[in-house]
Length: 332
Ligand code: KG4
Ligand code: ZN
Image (cartoon, rainbow, N blue to C red; front, side):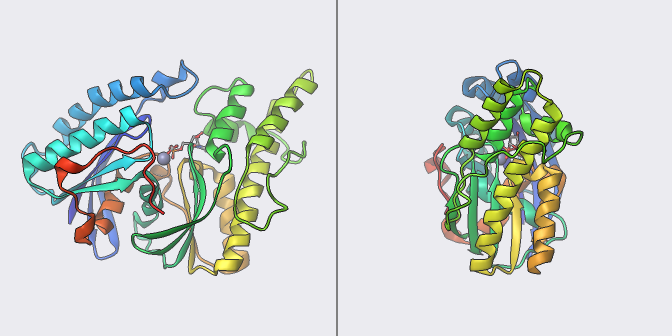
């Protein structure tokens, strides 16, 4: 099966063609246009601005890389949510039009399910049940993937997402948007034990997270110190986030005893987090999967990948004219 994937949930306009044979997926083509430079001036993503640029870019990307008559494409997968409503709508309405025109099945996909399926791209075939740590700009969740299409949420952030905390602390340090990669780069020159920032909810036995206290603590520290050593602040903050994520993942893994642990979402691009999760896997003797670096951040290959699995079940294939973008779409 060859699937065209379309992703416009936030500030990346992306299309991809993925072919699936049994459980193995091959990315034939993947194109991502990042709007980061456009939104940097605003200090964050402006939904209407994102939608306008998706509109301009998506049409030209499709015209350039996809046959006009849809020849060779068996189905279309599109991110239906969660995300920014005006941005999602551009991808969904475009996908509906193509599916209707080409008379091809349309598979609406959750953006978060897409992030999880980035782990199937390449040669990896993770064993199920899997414990999935999703860490993105809008979500921080622990999900048990019991089977393909069968997910259960066992923990989530009660306030900020991990990526959001990276972005906010980067803003406090004057590093710009998006903050994650900038904090990671700066942290490489700092001491990760210079400041003992709080790890939220560590005394609780559930699998929930909290990052707003950490963010506030960084803010007070910056106010308190006249000339704050930015690299030490970045490294100690990153350490607190990673520590909280790994601690709760370990607790969950000990209880669930999954066949594998998967990392997913934009923060999965963070090398310290990737390394620490791999160490946890060795300690617990559970195989750990991290998505290929190129497919950690938002892309359409992961959406097509999820679509490949979803399309196997007839009930996941929608009548194109009934699909609606849902900014709060839930999948677990
Ligand atoms: O999944 P994603 O691309 O978009 C959403 O679905 O939200 O995640 C974006 C988030 C941003 O908050 C960004 O700062 C964070 O991922 N991020 C990182 C790194 N690269 C991106 N956070 C930490 N370290 C990184 N290297
Ligand atoms: Zn994402």
